[in-house]
Length: 69
Image (cartoon, rainbow, N blue to C red; front, side, top):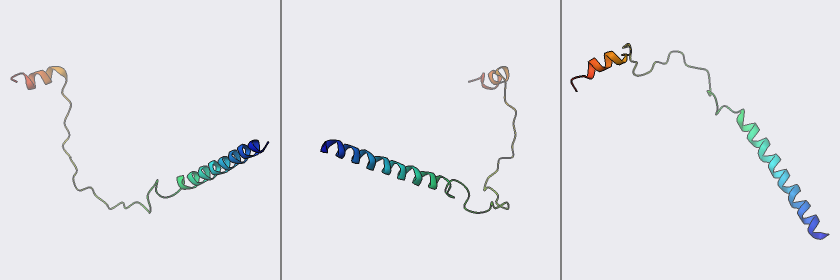
C-alpha cells in the first residue's frame, strides 16, 4: 500500500513539472526573440547588391559555351 502511494506521489510531481515546463515554453514563444526587437529601419541598405541580371542558358547554349573544354 505504501509503495502505491509513493508511485502516485511521484507521478503527480512529474505531471506538475511537465505542466510547468509547458507553460514556461509557451510564455517564451511569444517573446521578442522570435521577431524584431523594435521597428524596422527602412533606411537600411545592404553593403553589396548585385544589379547584374542574366538569363539562364538552355542545354544547347550551355554546350556551345563549354564545348572547347
